[in-house]
Amino acid sequence: MSRIGRRAIPLANGVAVAISGDTLTARGPLGEVSVKIPAGVNVRIDSDQVTVEPEIGASPGAWGLARTIIANAVEGVSKEFERRLFVVGVGYRAEADGSKLTLSVGHSHPVTIEADRGVTFAVEPAITLPGKKDNYPAIPVVVKGVNKEAVGDYAAKVRAVKPPEPYLWKGIRYQNERMRTDKAGKTAK
Image (cartoon, rainbow, N blue to C red; front, side, top):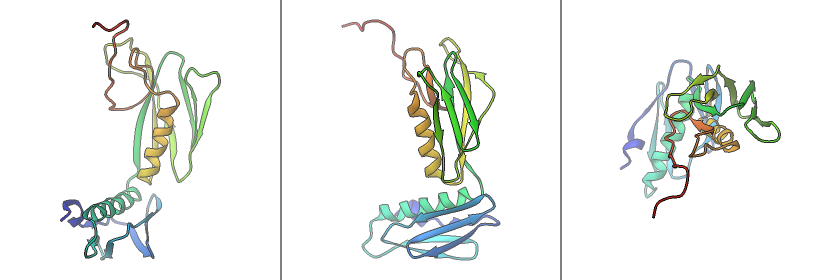
């Protein structure tokens, strides 16, 4: 039995769910998300909740996966998902214009990332992060959207532009990412 799959998904006020074939569509105050339901599960929609049940002989992993995918869709249309990153480094800049993010992070040219699937970018005023390094200014970049998978994809694309390096911690990193520290110079044998 899947502990995750057994739990019912409560529907928030203003959220409507419909099934068409193997696609579930959730509509809410913040938008609409359509997700594909994995094979091997049956989805039942009641007035205030959605339940997922496995077909006989189906994998319990598919049961829990289907429940999590549907729960993320239902949660996303009532409350946006967000992922925070920090652009850390002297002279590094970030500018956001809705679904377009421009990063100047030490490359010979600015890097532009354009999002779709309802994902937007926001840049907040620079802050100083606590830590033992040189306290470079950190520019918070927020990736928001109703689709959790799309938010994670675009956050990963932003981080991939300039991953953090382990010596001076410069680069783009997630908010709570643990930084592995390397000491400068040769390692002792």
